[in-house]
Length: 260
Ligand SMILES: NC(=O)C1=CN([C@@H]2O[C@H](COP(=O)(O)OP(=O)(O)OC[C@H]3O[C@@H](n4cnc5c(N)ncnc54)[C@H](OP(=O)(O)O)[C@@H]3O)[C@@H](O)[C@H]2O)C=CC1
Ligand SMILES: O=C(O)[C@@H]1CCC=N1
Image (tube, rainbow, N blue to C red; front, top):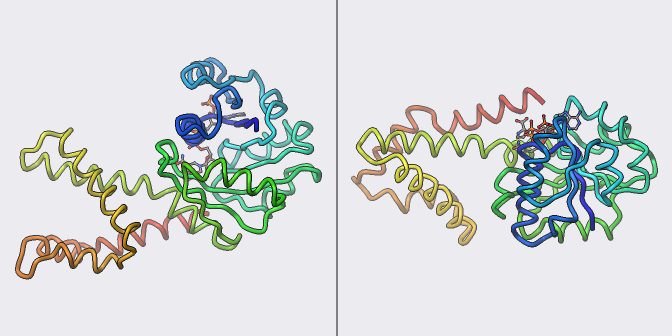
């Protein structure tokens, strides 16, 4: 399979790197185009993928064309490459897109899918929110699931829930990074070296996530198993409750949803 990225920024780069490093696809099967060719050429050389001079050239090269520009550019870019999309598989990763919004931008004779990836796909720990009921053939659906399965949890979601699932998967790495940063700030405040504090904070998120995936215990149970009666952790938990920690997270998701 040959894969083309139209737009090769943070998210497309993370997807390409994950695919290559986890041996899902050889680098020479990946093509990309972007706004600035000189910048793209450097990134492409590092990964061993093909840098294309134009979007049309990139779209023509792939069996599967991944639309990875900003949402507001989608209309212009799909018009530009429309002729090359005929009989192709088109995958759109833009926030806020579902099949209903994407299809009018594409030629009739191509199959398409809207997904929302997240940046941890680069290290094989991603999520790929996957709109169900797309125009994808069963054969191509299986091929794409096989391609991305090793580097992402495939999360099928109906069109109505693409926005919220995309927010939880796609945006939250930023929230999680803020948690890591804040926890490391606290470590530094009390004398830890920054590098060690950051690694510990990141490992806490990674390890706690792994614990959940292993046991599927309710997070409240996981929290209780850390809080000894009269101990130290419950004091921190109590303060977080006073500060509205959980409400703040939900408010952050509300803010994203209100923008969509
Ligand atoms: N970042 C994330 O975590 C996630 C992003 N997404 C979606 O991915 C898409 C890309 O986001 P992200 O990677 O963060 O954005 P970036 O700004 O990092 O990348 C955008 C890319 O588009 C390129 N570009 C700009 N104009 C054109 C054009 N006319 N033709 C071709 N390429 C063009 C840019 O080129 P150049 O670099 O040369 O300027 C750049 O490579 C968005 O739709 C976003 O909603 C989805 C899930 C998560
Ligand atoms: O912030 C954004 O618009 C993109 C979509 C999801 C994550 N980043």
